[in-house]
Amino acid sequence: MTITDPILTVNNATLTSNGTGLWMVTQQALVSRDSDYSNNATWGLRPFGTSRVEYCTINSNAVGGLWLNQSGLSDLTVSRLTLANNTQYGVYAEASGLAFDSSNIGDWAISGSQIGVAAILSDVSFQNVTMSGGSTAAVQLSQSTVNAINTTFSASGFGLAVDTSSVDLTSCTFSGNSVGLYANQNSLLSVTNSTFSGNSLWGASVTPSGIGGETNTFSGCASYGNAGGMTLINASDGDVLLRDATVIRDNTAAGLHFENCILTVNDQAGGANWSTLRNLYGISCNQSTLAISDVTVVDCTSYGIRCQDSTVILAGCSVTGEFGVYAETIP
Image 1 (cartoon, helix red, strand yellow):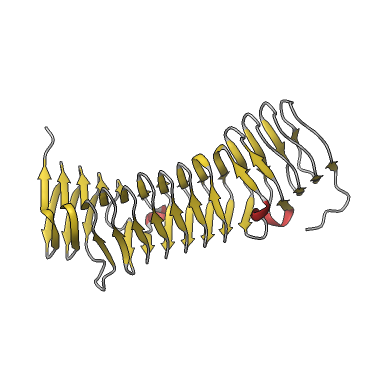
Image 2 (image 1 turned 180 degrees about the horizontal axis):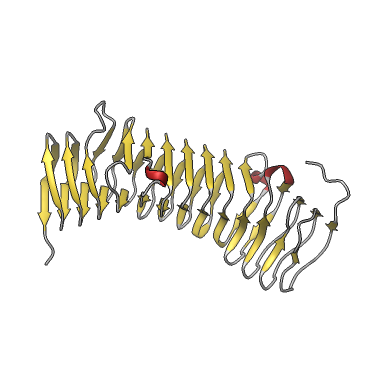
């Protein structure tokens, strides 16, 4: 990107201990290099429009580090930044286009914020990078379009949290979070060849209600070594599809949990499209109505299928565990 005759150039400057370090009110070009936007009462830096920001330090601001507003990919060069210990956000983008890949974010250091990267009404992509270190979320997106390839979301509250967004994930890893992938409120997911492992609560937690009634799909995925493999909340038929050898295994609680769902659960037309094995519970449900057919739930350390306050119909299933099926009603 080339900026000619920029409106504002800020080089080798110290803009600290203000209300905001630099806040651009109208859309105009900015070039800033080797400057410090730290320890401000709200934001460190808020450019607006065409910008090049390089070799800057944006630390310890009380709200957030970098706020991008209406910045398209062709208008934006942001590289070689330090964004540490900004209270709420490392980076916040509104109505913008952001691309994080190994050629740029490798020079970023984002740490110590509640949310590492947050965006609303934006197009965001990740490729060959690691997003980590948000006490609430590494990445949190709303009303946005998200594409991630070979990206790791780790060491955070939520690895990736989305709502009302269209999300396409390929060959991604979610590890060491409380919840790897958290999808809520009308997000549409396409998740392919991705791994959910070592998360302390759930590999994935999905409240479907897909955009336009479309189906959320997990294809060729693996969820293992979590407390729980995957939980589906308020799901109905057609909302979620597990396919192409998706496996949910070796989780210390439920492999697959249904909460307040009305679903037909089957092998998705055969061909070993998904399986659950060696979990504490293979399938568990609460306050749900399920028709489970032609499903193999094997080698569970406790219950194969555990039902609580639910209506469940089984047909053609193979279930092995200490207990095959356990059902209870809580008074």
